[in-house]
Amino acid sequence: MSPTSYLTAPPRDATYEISEGVRKRQRSVRCGAVSVAVIDIGTNTTRLLVAEIEAGKIVELERRTTITSLGQGVDATGRLAQEAMDRVADAIAVYREVIDRLGAERVVALATSAMRESENGPEFRDFLKARFGIDARTISGDEEARLTFLGATSERNDERESVVIDIGGGSTEYVVGVPGHDPEFHVSTQMGSVRHTERFLLSDPPRHEELERLTAAVRETVPDVSAAQGLAVAGTATSLAAIDGAAEVHGYRLPLATCERIGAMLAAQPVEERRHVRGLHPDRAPTIVAGAVILTESIRSFGLREIEVSARDILHGAAL
Image (cartoon, rainbow, N blue to C red; front, side, top):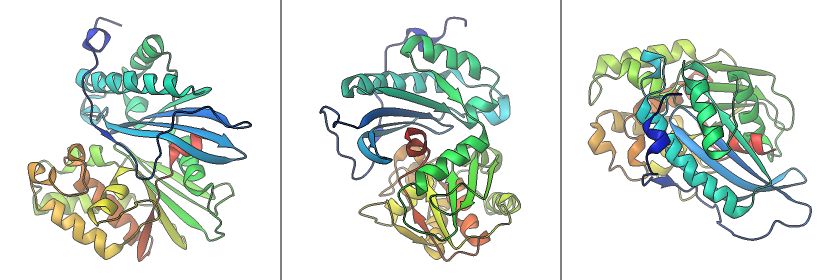
């Protein structure tokens, strides 16, 4: 790999989202428990979970999210942008320190849509391994869907058929099944908050016709399946719950009408105004409108009246 800024530049300050209810503890692992760290290198965020696993139960020790926008421009150029790789490298430098401090016995790193589709993704993975000892495995959309379903449903005592919706920056996964069993249906679509912002929402704030084209594209992409209930994971769903005033996003129920209302409010504002919306991380402001449309139209397409927000996702599935 030719010399690049992410090889030489010192880590910059980063802004983190710390999940609700996560207790940060520096202590030895309980007897019989295994400590594991999972890094998810996504299209919009780079995330870390450090947890103890015992008898199939997950106890979170630390969880962090950094909005790194690795998928910036990938849909148009087919390559990871230099500044995007720099942001991910900065985040992983911090995560490596956290992992070492907490003494994780096993480290799992996953890379999803942006790495899958970029020409220079393999080079960047090689760099992360050489620099940080992090061996990121690029997983397929099918594997991403399976791990997301496992994480979202692993501790649910519910025999109803469920659809898990995972809206990422570059892809959205839909998985249908009964908690505690293998999924009956899953699909990974090339529909995401970053990708569809870059494809459809070119004005700030977006014009009515842009929103109509986005909505039509989403409706054409959502699979024609049914389920008794829905779970939504990842940043779009948790952000809408926080905007709606949720004290705890995990388990919060978002009615379809609420998603429509919040989405319309966000779409009417330019990005700079969105950055100040209570409950929304400022760095999610550029892509939250596309994410909200994807979530709203998914709920509508499945014939659901509401969606339950889950803070458990692919991080937990990979930890197990």
